[in-house]
Image: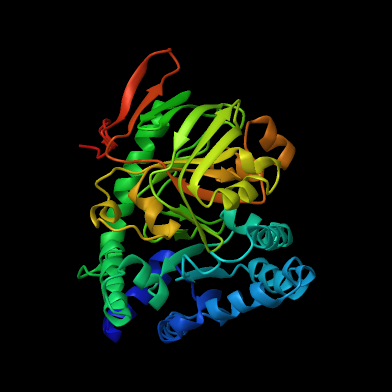
Length: 414
């Protein structure tokens, strides 16, 4: 079992680099009950850093499953108003939000996908206002993960649960740089590297990206005024934070009507407690017009039917194949990790911060710029060591952006 000193380093990294908690600021934590010991360390550290209040929303996989198995549809599809008010109250107060994830990827595999889809849609509709705070970087927020027994054994099926948890702790701590003597300094250096990469892409200002890989032949227009981001972000208050830990990506948005061709997944997608695997999507004028999946096709169907924007893309993220997550050789069945092993795209809502002035625009203005809107935002992995990407420049010429899964551009500032 990982020792308490190491867990304290991880907790401090999440608070100081993840949400960058400020003195006098409130903190909301969403955490698994199985991770109570680690969460208590985070809470203690938060108060030591000067938090004025720390509130925990506990999640329990077993109770979640029992509810899906036994509650009627009117309960599943009714997202409680008190939960909405709770989140909105903390957001309006400028709180930081830390999400600690460790969900079993097979949790809901035997539940009717339509019930899960209805519940997800109800939650998304209810939390529209709160999501504005996070997707527009109005408040600092971050996502980290810790092991759970079921999740660890999914990744390491040949090990006992205890050994699997130990192995997953080791993998997570290495990938998020907690194994280094000064993780916070290591993240400062890493954020500087990602900043250089996004600046190179912003200078290029590509009109279109062209993706080629086994099963993938896709052209993606980028909106005028699009912005590449990655690594740290800056909240409205001027506080720098890291939304995802780990993160190895630089990301922007496609034009909602400008995606054409077919793209194939390269890693399983854990969506709503069910896995979708070996799937492909075909786009015409930005919209998914055909899809298939070897596993979870019914789940994918319900995902695409969430609303009109669910069939269009909201994000494109570039991740070199040599990222620490990829080099671990593990499939995590967890999007936070798997998306940082591979180039990926997201169905659904785009981040307004990926458009110049987008955070100040209303939905109609964003739509006119080609920015997709949806109740969902679901990343899935399309990259591999066989991925080639070309960028179309304003003068009509193209140049290599990725070759064989890694950067063909000099993004290191050397």
